[in-house]
Length: 193
Image (tube, rainbow, N blue to C red; front, side, top):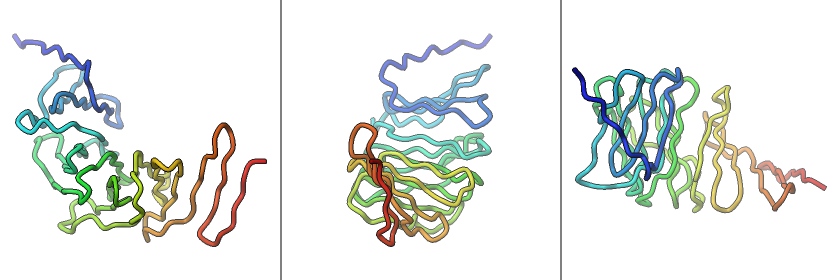
């Protein structure tokens, strides 16, 4: 007989579903748990360090989980074996967001004071900086075609980068309410009236 573990997730700091919807990763109290309809197990315990998990992202096939901690560590974990594929330490000591590309080949990492970094999954190279603006990348997302990365930051802007070159293509600045300005690298812009 197996014993069911009830998780008190009152202080959960992260939650994400695997793309197939059959499993979820939940972070709280310095621990990372994996839950499906059959079981609940400790995926990556960090009880000794007690760093809060700030960001979670499954790869599109659900085999990898990227975990961003408040102390700047980013770990990429093989879900089946719970082994670490890669560990990075961000220079700013804060990595609040992570996102996989739709094909699972790239991982975008938001670095609090150093912008956005991009890592080729499985590579031994360190993540390259694609935007060195001193803004906090609070949230990251790839476009469905995987060609662009969007980064939302504290300054109220959403920046759009080429996933292949890392160059900024443009940005959207919210001015308040329903007003916004969109600009590209050439200085062209559009705005609400």
